Image (cartoon, rainbow, N blue to C red):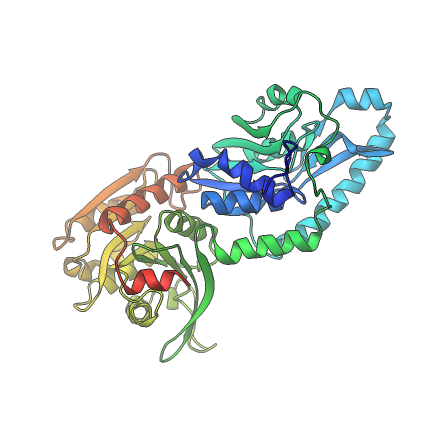
Length: 448
């Protein structure tokens, strides 16, 4: 509940009020990027309300000596540096003093990065909207550094959001952010803390706990690491379920990749945010250390991997949370051949397939038996793979299929915005295939 003087009870309350101003962003391809430490409780509430993933951007204020809360500059991940010349001049800070404070903050930036991330990779921003959240903005130096760092990381659009901001800083920040959104922008501004009934400093432990919780529950449901026990091997995976999922999509990685692939995780986030359960999977796991796992060995053993994927289908059908959900497959590179081969089995339950940069030529003899609607997504500049996909269409005689090209993209879709476009194409294909959430068991399972 908010306090009566136009401010906030605490940061969580501020986050909920801010989220109400951001409803128009729900459903966009967005990542909430909170500024530690105080911005994380605010960002957590915003991410939960918008159904978006939560990450942090490490930014450190370069505070005036003897007045550390007053920013004379800021630094951010990626070597971004912002200097507030006016504050430096008014505070009479010389170059040596500035350099000393900056060095101290660089050390703290590195320490916090190791602590907060806990080995988790940063969420990919290329081609996506970044929603920068802090608990309040006074001078704007930290926020400007954050916006510049996110722009350098490939964010397509940057929205800066905060519960309270000094009125005279709004126009200045519009030079770095595409949009600035706030709850309060008072003319008289002494400090951020004056607008909170409880402005207790956020601890490192609270930041770590919130980020872990956001990572575990996911943007719009819950996620968990799973281990699928087959006859000869245990396959690790990560299962994410939004509320009342329409279907479950298994993401099959290509050669040399797995469930921790940043590209695979990004696609899974887009699909989960759209209401599709996802299973990120490692298939090419040796049954014993003696078996190879190289492009010349297990990664290209199509029959073995397709058989494992068929067994995973049965595992999903028997699991309470996914029993009754229609099944889709998303295969990348060689993983697309595995998906097509598994879908060609007579008893397959697969109802939709997406191949991204796929190698359908590896499953050439099985293509005519595929019955599920199939979307082939290929980078326009990936000429060899494009040619094999065009030939594959002549063999996909038993199903509806389509070939979509992503302009400027090469095989790995590493060019700005190309992976985001591919993910949106996949999302729309699956949503067309699974227009409604199933009744009964699947919805009950999602209420856990």
